[in-house]
Image (cartoon, rainbow, N blue to C red; front, top):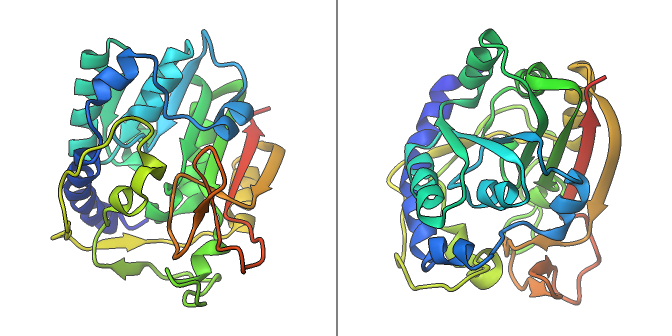
Length: 282
């Protein structure tokens, strides 16, 4: 584990979260008017959540957490960013949708939850999450430790194959990479994705954001994810790959084919841009 790099990422996320939310208009009003930030793919993999306890890992600013709570789940969101959790708590109050939010490094939170014997019916995490974690086996064992028997883990993530390319679709990164990658800080991908990641009204917000804190990413292949979950004692129930990315315009010339589903330019072949899976605790 590299908790020192997790801490560096916490500082970087604190700065980036302010920029991200600056582009979204009145989010509380969006939720009060019935809005949801969930995509159909997540809802399909999650299934019915009404009346169930649901743990949302790396919940960021809580928008998906509140969308899940609106579906009737009893939601607990966990994130390393002070800024994100503070925003999520305010948004819960202002929107009138209840969810519990806890700020902690995820690995530390797993230890605390296990010692307190906290258990959940569902665990969920999505989009750009595991790249911030330094040990996938600790992640998978932590998930297994807080799931009830027959509890389900639902995961949606950008496909690691797509991360081989730079923003101009040129091969740039190794798929098989065991070392952390130092970056210039978490960027303003919300602004770069335009309306792809803003389902409600938008505002100009912070322009030309530059993160003062560097960040560190870890690359995990699909096989490593599946093996970690199986090694933690979970049973893989379903896995699906998608030829589009929900909301995120991470590469040059991406097109919206409807429903904020982003695909490569028309002259490019179809490649996997996103994948999801469901694993069950026996």
